[in-house]
Amino acid sequence: MMIDRTSIPADTKYLTPASIAAIAVVAVALVMLPFVWDNRFYISLINEMLIFGLLAMSLDVLLGYTGLLSFMHNAYLGIGAYVVGLFLIHISPTSIWFAALVGIAATSLIALPVGWVQVRTGGLAFALLTLAFGMMFHTVVWKWYSLTGGDDGLMGVPTPEVHLFGWSLGTTGDPKVMYLTTVVVVGLCYLLTRRIIHSPFGSVLEAIRENEDRAAFVGINVRRYKLYGWMLACMLASIAGALFILYKGYIGPTTMSAFSGAGVLMMVLLGGMGTLWGPLIGAVIFIYISDYISTMTEHWEIYLGLVVILLVLFLPTGFVGIGDHLKRFLKRKG
Image (cartoon, rainbow, N blue to C red; front, side, top):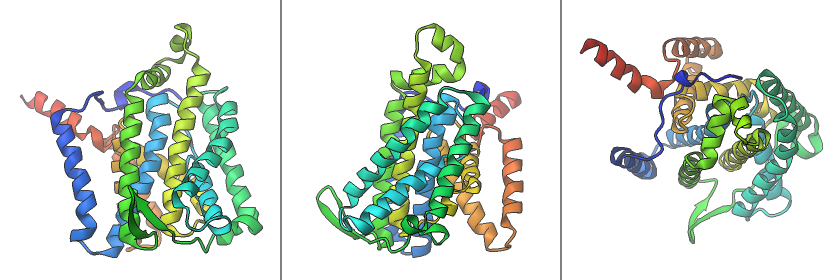
């Protein structure tokens, strides 16, 4: 898949003082939110937005920076969630962080051979392979009733205590505790991923996105770096999966469906590719719109689709590109 660089908003390597201040304000606001606004529904809703924002950000590593389209990236959230849930149910109901590491490791072991096959292709073939593998994984969790619960889903996941930096915050069954855990984990993932993307490794990924043949000509091992980008994206998706199962206490095969995969892709397009933080905004918009419209009609998918079509047509760079549009508009007026 060829990515038009003009459709990707500009992203800077170094944070400006204003950007640092904005990030600090957002971080403090998110941490303080459950203490000043005691609404369990909206705290849980924002928690879900952050989890799917992390998943969308992981897809942006592939689509926005490496130029690789994955139709069912949500499958790797599902794999991570199922592994963590099964570990807590059958092995250790208290080892939350070890369970998360097991989920990341298991997802990586599955994603590695899949990625090895996929990176030998490119463009549409790569995208179709992600769809094929994703449908296979979806079928496995749907049909393997004795392990995954089949179409009933994986239920009965324990609610272990959460320990952060030596402090016991409570159990994952407490929405505030789970929310704060999600904020910390998603924040650390964003900062770490941003550091990786703005390193020489990230520059190589962008070179591959811009011109794969030229990158290979100057000596870059294109397949190897595609595989590295794929693995990074799948590991981030598995972290989102670990947060998802801890937050929900349940996961079903619909989470790994093609429909859900299309939703994650919409989040990236709504927010803006190649920015990392854009997909986080896209997840907030997508989940809020779908939640709001679903309260008015059972056919909410139709209206959500119309909203997404209009946004893509009139804001092709996503919501993070609004600033660039305003600058160009003011220049023309000036």
